Image 1 (cartoon, rainbow, N blue to C red):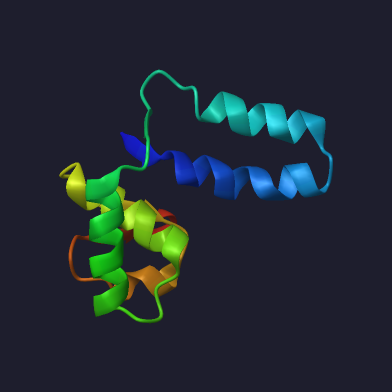
Image 2: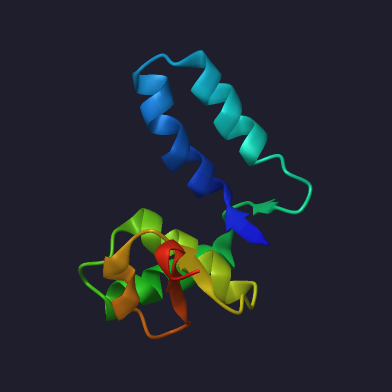
Length: 99
């Protein structure tokens, strides 16, 4: 299983905003799981994210980076809670509620 370091940044915002130390630790622990590979943002991913945003103008950059990370690393599916991403056709998007 892979994800982008950007996913960590997205998940950590609310705990930091609320100064909720236990949640900050829990988010950090989640992203350190042995079966999860957290990948850095690189030029190939940034380029793919730009291409995705060009093709899907309503796509936000964080989502474009996460999707690009999946595409560049040949993920079979993209797992999300965001039903709006089901419009992406470049790879299969699966909602957690569908699992």
